[in-house]
Length: 301
Image 1 (cartoon, one colour):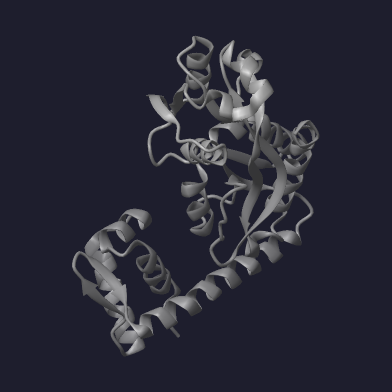
Image 2 (tube, rainbow, N blue to C red; image 1 turned 135 degrees about the vertical axis):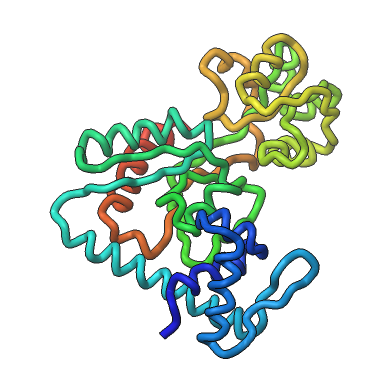
């Protein structure tokens, strides 16, 4: 029978492609990873990886073994969840990843409910955007994650993960007066010639600005950059330009800047988890708590 610890190392190597990255994930030396891979190849009786430049790729035998390992890992977690479900109380440690704008409106209310209803459960909150939190769920670094996908983009979850929809977070245009008054009448076309405020290229939120403007027939002239939604709203308030933000990200002090919703633009907010962990009482309780915390946000959207 193959050593499960070595199989997990190979599984991670398939994703990370270097011994160094695998060693960092598991807190062991690179030479230890290399030794375990050699021993696994001896167990299997065939070559599992080949070097391509600076990275390692799986051979056909390696890919077959990793596919089976993924199912083994899922089965082990299902067994763990099933055993945990036999208990009468929700205990242990649960780690919830959340992007920043959902922290105060969704994650903290849900965690507060969990603390109140399950005193034996310790909840950890981790700030992470979906591009980081979804892989973290898959790698069992976190138990579940509050995530979003833009309505104008399609996305597929890795095998073994599921996501439950919680509510829709509309995109809105923020503009200073008198641009705000024009936008209220004519939509985004009214601010086609305005200066725009956006995050840096590559940031998830800039896609919403580019989509919104292209839908309205123009390319935005981006003059100012910020990684902070609050700072972007403040720049709008001081007349530096206009921007598009998810409604949930607009600070209370900047609500007066909202000019109009963006047609066909929204973030779909959900909770992503491993299918194999769903029977685990803490995960099930967290999903219920997030549903309850999302109710007022769903009604407001």
